[in-house]
Length: 308
Image (cartoon, rainbow, N blue to C red):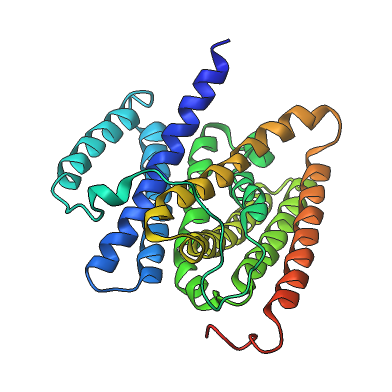
C-alpha cells in the first residue's frame, strides 16, 4: 500500500526540480540578454555536469572513505543548503500574474511545420544512459574495485554527454528532427557496443572493461544530443507562461526510462541480457527510421533549408 506513494513522491521530487531549474535558467539567460536556445543549453549542460560530478564524488567517497554510507549524503545535504542560500538571492523572472496555472496546449511555433515530438524517444534515451552502468559484466572479476569502476562509467558517460552538447545545438533545426535522429543513431551504436560487451567473456578483464567503457561514452554522447534537442522542443510549442509546465511534462516522460533496468531485471528469466540489449538496439533503430521518415515528410521541400 505504501509503495505507490513512495514512487509518486520520488518521481515528483525528481521531476519538479528539473523542470523548474531548466525553465529558470532559460529565463535568467534571456533576462541577461542571451538567446532562449543558449539558456536551454546552459540548463542541460549544468544538469549533465551535476549528474556526472555528483556520481564521481559520491563514488570516490563511498569507495575510499571510512564512512561510505554517511559522507556522500552529508556532503550532498551541505551543498544543497549552500546552493539554497545562493538561489534565494537570484531575481524572480516571472510576475505573479503570469504564474497562474493554465492548461498546456500543444501547438507549433509560427511558420514552423509540426514535427514528431521527441517524447517517444526519451524512454530509450534515459534508459540507454542507465544501461551503460552495467559493471556486472566484469564485476565478478573486479573484486573490491567494482564501485570504482561503476563510478568511472557514470563519469565517462555524463562527461561525454556534456562535451557533445555544443555540437547538439548546431545539429538542431526547427524544420526537421535532425538532432533527434542523430542521437538515436548514436544510441543504437552504443547499444550495439553494449551487446558486444555482454557477449564477449574474455579472460582479459581489461578488454571487456574497455568495451563497456566505450559503450558508456557512446551512450553518453547520445544522451547529450538528445537532452539538448529535447529541451528545445517545449520552447517551440509553449507560450512563456506554459514553458515550465511543458518542460515538466518532458521530464516526466523522460524519467519513465529509469524504469527500464528494472523491467529488464524482471525479464531476466525470459531471455538473456545480450538478447535484451539486442532488442533495445533494434527498437532504437526502428524508432530512428520512423522519426527520420516523418521528419522529411513534414518538413516539405520548401522548408528543408530553413532554420539554419
